[in-house]
Image (cartoon, rainbow, N blue to C red):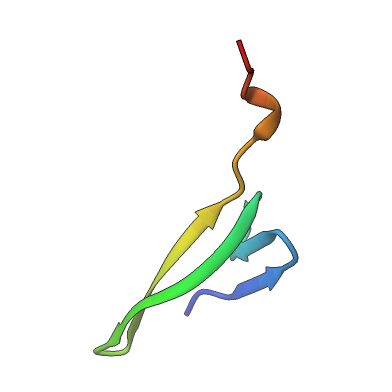
Length: 50
């Protein structure tokens, strides 16, 4: 089974690091599987007011 660690702003699944996480929600939990939805932080520095 995969090891999942959640820290502020980051998710670690085995050796994979996922950054800029703002929200995690459980979508479905059935048959021994859990589906999660991950919402990422938007990069406001990429937006310009032209």
